[in-house]
Length: 310
Figure 1: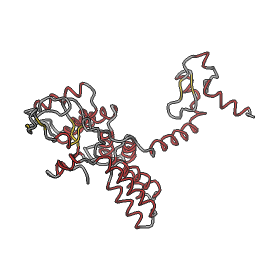
Figure 2: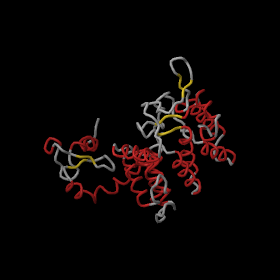
Figure 3: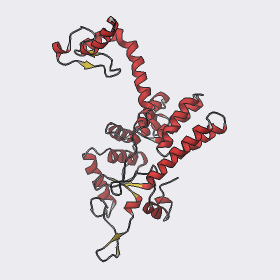
Figure 4: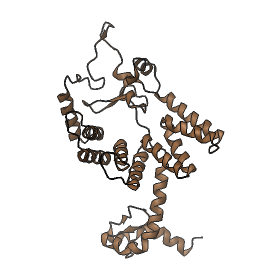
């Protein structure tokens, strides 16, 4: 049997938490974006109810953030050609400025044969078949076109060019951060990481550890293992070994060997069990199984710049 309190909770989502008007009266109730527990007719009702709702809202918002923070993020994605999971290492994948696809080095450098079975010189994108650019200016213009299409990777890369003064651009940290913020809004996890690193003491920005952690968390939620590794290290230094272990475990499943090494150290220090370390090893092996291929192995033998496994 439901109590009166239960009925009130059941109906809470159908009425404005401030004035009590129902959905049928307003037809536009909007949930609190922070906690999603209550709804309001409009901004005025939300402001009027803020003092009553503030404490509960903050508590629930923090719980939701924690849940999201420690969820396993989606993987990096698959190569647009071979459809195998892309490796974590940047040297194992290449962004194509012509079509905006991310392609593994195995497919980029795979031999191309003519109709007689002879290997021919491959100077075209393996996905869209557009010829490789002959000069830096052409690459720059291709990136501009990708930026106009709101390509998050292109915008992120332009920010990196400003940060380092590459591609003929002046070194400008302000413009770099503008690009990274734009790329982050477009979904780039790496952009969030770079913003976090800026507040952590880089790129000419005033150090703000709280902001650094905030952006690292946003990056980690979107799958950036470097940000996840940093969060784990921060928690470990604070003595929060359980939280550190959670971060490292998530990063290992996405191929971060440094996090695996830290779990090993925690095991040696008695802060993680043998079973914990064994599971981490198996998770890392699963990642390796998903990214390995004969063609990627062949290309990796050509040099360090083509390797895709640590």
